[in-house]
Length: 215
Image 1 (cartoon, rainbow, N blue to C red):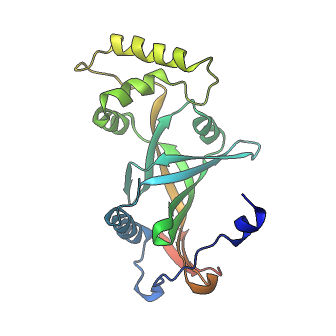
Image 2: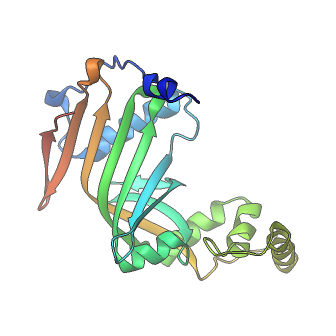
């Protein structure tokens, strides 16, 4: 692609904006409303979020993960605890989440701390997954170097023989959920002339303070 073409690529946002006077006292009701609108707009994977972590030395990494649960306590996703993100969370539990709802000219940015959910909560979610996904969780040493695709598929086949479809597939001991407890939640709405609305909820003790940020 020509560099001038790349520099010229832009969209003009004309969103209705966020009515600061009508915001709820806490961020989750507004997040739930925006997520419902993303689903209603038929966005592809509206629960997809970019999860940012950092090593103990501060080296960042990011990847797309699916949000699977949320409530007033925070946002839950599931993964391999031995993956890169799992190892980084163990060393540095500070996490960021980004929901990129481009088609609606919106994004939600969450900052918080990740903690493991209970084994019971993990087991309940794991049991709801399709059979292939449960076997895949066992087969994948997530983020580790492997020799070939064939070796991965061979391991999957061996595990499928060990846990035939229709039988119980236990939760792998290295797999489970994280709850991201937010200390900030920013709602971003694209506006005309790049004068975007940015309203951030910031936790102060047991309450939330709402701040408008310059775009």
